[in-house]
Image (cartoon, rainbow, N blue to C red; front, top):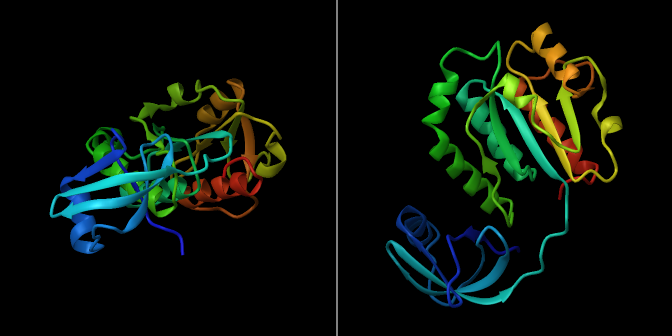
Amino acid sequence: MARRRFFVGAIRNGRAELTGEDARHLTRVLRVEAGQQYEISDNRRAYLAEVESARKEHVVFRVEEALDPEPDEARVILLAALIKFDRYELLLEKATELGVSAIVPVRTARSEPGLERAALKRMERWRKIAVEASQQSRRTRLPEIEEPVEFQTAVMRQAGSRLFLDEGQGRPLLRSLGTSEDSIAVLTGPEGGWTDAEREAAVGAGWVQVSLGRRILRAETAGIAALALIQAAGQIE
């Protein structure tokens, strides 16, 4: 059975600490005790560590050894149109589990009014969701959760491969992936789909229209499916 993994702020002199809510979760829910072994990550490298002490709001790990680094993989950026927050948070969680490197909320013409301003107030919550999903999926590095941007800014994002997810239009996604891209950007639309103007702007900026097939998927389902296909193609681990 794989060991649980936790993210720590820093490792100093062979030791790392967790405090506050994170420590309370370990001591009260998981009942960690001194002498137990876990994996920890400082968002750069993963380590095998032993719990040196565990009190209510303070857990200290002692590093035992560095674990093998993860293989190099393409950096995948998900630029996802803002949708209702319960569905957006599901997308964020599953995108993290699927290995995405960065998530960028995008305000589009058909995004509900006010979502962008409300999203700014949820950044801390969304980053916490990303931490929890990263620990569950045993990632070494956390995804970056960036602040919302306008569609016009999103289409200027650069990457080795830029895929514009468009329902029923474009080539199948898997046929549009390169074999050695160092970065892949995926732009997913809102509930209600893209406007003609947005579609033209993306194609004009060099994005490649790709499709997931003839079925119409929810916005969050489309994003998850696209990332799963990219992972299956071996672009992310």
